[in-house]
Image (cartoon, rainbow, N blue to C red; front, side):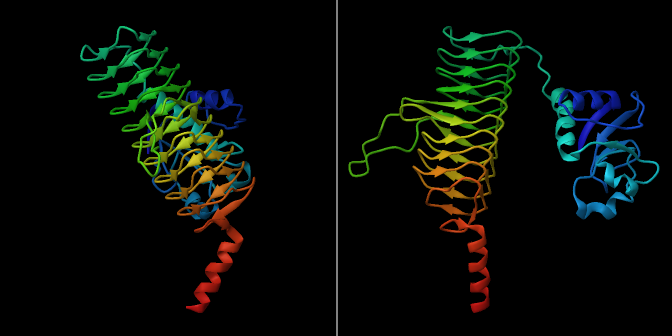
Length: 331
């Protein structure tokens, strides 16, 4: 549930229009909504949303004041529920949720007296740093950044505008670009798993990590610095909790990577890739654009653009399904 605390319809309409989403409703601009809830849990002062046909029966019985919905489904709404008509209700919900997020993350511009900041680092305006955080040498923290408690930043870190860093995070040797969010317990920029196999001689990592704009890194996720160059996470990517991204990995824009995925070193992943939970990807591979990797897959070979793969070793999902059916018949 998202508690909106009396958000006016005008605020909802404005944020959708700012994001180039057409919206149409008979709701008055000063009409207020108390929270966003699911169809079955909504009450008379709530906003809800309809984006999945399997919940069509629930739609006819909702108690909500208003519903984000496509025009073709408004005939199923009870008369007391006002439609807020959009082409993509789930996208509209995601954008509206940022009204709530902005309230939660409003900065107080206070740097705690219990924070340690190196004299060689630079902190810009309107930065909040919570207690027991340490900022090491040669770090730059730009405007409107929020850093949680018990966090370590630096050395040689650049954190650009509007970044939110939660508690107990460690970031070293990294560039975090604008509007990113780093959740609690993440470890970014440490040395990777690199050594000469026979002698076990450790390979020193001198590269960095670059996380591009509008990307979210989940709790307890680890992203290793490159050996010489950069480990890169593309723009608008969403990395879930407990993900391991090894040194020199490059991930393109708009990636969606679910929990417990492991990506070995020097693998190059294209744009718009989706990786299901607990999938493993071997090192030095090339994964194309628009690829979907099913949960628990084991990727051992390169994957071309626009493919969907599953299983171990991962293969075209249609072949994998045929094998599953064949094996089940044998049993």
